[in-house]
Image (cartoon, rainbow, N blue to C red; front, top):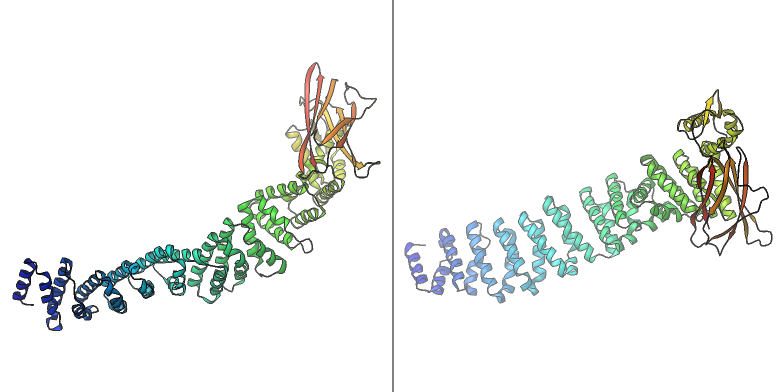
Length: 597
């Protein structure tokens, strides 16, 4: 362009003849003026902003330069073109196809502006919606980071309004799985996740799961990640697909197996019961070879959710196969290796819960757990709970409790050490006891008995001395133990006149072991009066004064009130001994635990 031409056009602009100036500049757009085209196009772009727009025939002269190899010419041509069609929307429908068809030829910065233009005009072009969406989705694989991010953000906003429209392009959106840039990948996977959350059916998820075995690991990793997050938000999709996920625990690829186990564990944190039916099927029918994964998943679920989760699985056992209990036993072993204190709590609570409904089935299941986990800490927890209860007012239940105690003592005789102390305290008053005799009576090794007695003496729990394998009363000691030796025994038998009822009696044996006279002995028993009526049998030898080593035996009759308890519970019976010793008032309290069923 010559200086004369520029001067002439500037005068036109100063005089406000913008349309005339625009026409002059457009007339100069041709290859003969190629070197001056950047200036010419810049002038046209500025004039358009002053008011006049290009006519259709003038726009045709600009179009050939939209994809020009010169970046400056291309940039100005695109700016002129998009400005014109934006401000005259009726022409957009005719022109948009040209823009989308040339988009791959644009220089990077220009391409970014074109994508921004397409996004800004999307809502105004309902008839071109699919064309624009197709172009935008193709931008997900564009070399420009800005283009990819802008398209994802646009699709994310559109997803809120039209999720099922976006779902039509799900296959096209799967290019996001291949994204390498960390930021774009995160945004892309978030977009896919929101799409799946809003639109997926169980069948859609099943199809997605079935894609996993056929993909390479980088793709598998992203699929599994999305399925895990989807499962947290849409439990309704996971439950019908739980088996499909468990089957992948047998995948040939270790990475896949580990990743699947991880997402199942994550889902179980939020929906602990979502895989229960699938777990039961796998266990009962051996549908999965890698049972170690199943056991680890159950283990983590129990550790996360505590005893109630453990007990729920305990209740699901099929007594015909006992496969659930056997699997649960393996889980107990795993937990006991890593967290024995936690398993102690589980076994203690389980025994207490089972005691409230000690049916033959529960008895068998608990015994099987003990049999398959012969660990001292497990046996001890169970034994202590079973032994805390003095009696259960149901003969069949009481019999099962005693059978469990006998079973534990048969396998671990040393559990009965707690009974040794009471026996020694009573017998030592009659004279020295040989450790060998105690060992024979309780079927416990002499060394264990000796160590136990030494510990009791050291802790001043019994007033005795141990010498030459013989334990004797330490009469010279200032140690002051209890004044009264307390022993008790329950007796439950069928009522002779009514076979539906039971006669329950509590025998209390009291012995003065204080070495002094006990005076004004008064015994009161506190019990759950809404459950029992208690009466003391009259005895002619009843006395309120006990000389040293004198015995007193009392018999209390318990009569059950009402019907069978719908909610079994453990209750306390408290026995209070008030008396005088050497002119000073004394009191002893004893507590008995009773399971009411």
